[in-house]
Image 1 (cartoon, rainbow, N blue to C red):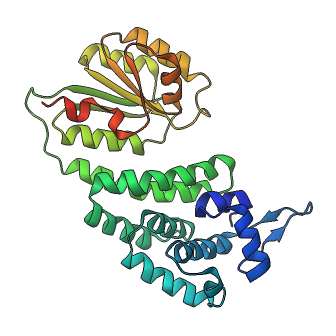
Image 2 (cartoon, rainbow, N blue to C red; image 1 turned 180 degrees about the vertical axis):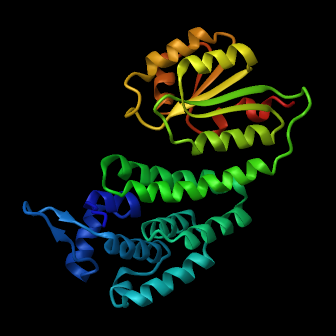
Image 3 (tube, rainbow, N blue to C red; image 1 turned 90 degrees about the horizontal axis):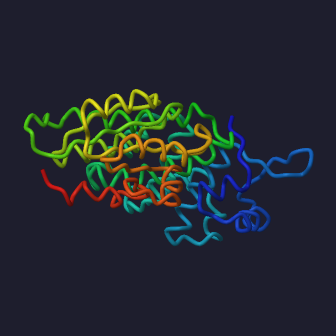
Length: 294
């Protein structure tokens, strides 16, 4: 069973801590546990209930009305609203519930409906990555079971691999050459896989080295294949003490390549202002993707 703080609930539901406290006292919507020092903590069922409440509340249902509903009525109304109103925050709330329950069918169903209605690119930029950002913050602090994060990430990864497999190979000499990799110790590759898919979809040539690639292997590959662009990054600073030093070293070794650095490394790239290194915060920062046609 996961244990969530009041701050965790705020991060996952978007409802302010003060508001949650008021709802507890005035409407008895939650019954928190208390530590020996008097601090609130919540379990999985509390998170699920509050996520369902947040969907109703954000859809215009008054909290006084929600407070009179049974748990079954809240869940039923939430499902109806989630089906009829495809707001990103509602879908993200449903994904968190599916992840917390380890409900593969529910997560797959939500994801497939999003892919059909929004397309792959919008599904990942509007739903998947904001969802993973929320979950990732809690995973780093130990508030959420790491297995649950791996469970849901695996489903997202499978969809990207399926989309990549469906693309025809670029057998011609047209297009730019793009090398993608994650530094040694970094294993969160969903963003990199997503970029790889879009780059290939736009007719460019890709070598995808994947997770945790030793620096020397990156340089050896680049010297052999000579890419036009390099895309890399790291999710947090946990696996890399000095991303700025790493970028300087990479920039010096590959002076003719344009290097895009995402995640936490983007902050270092922004500060360094190296000539051939560009921070990658959002998809549009990957400017060559659409501006340079094969």
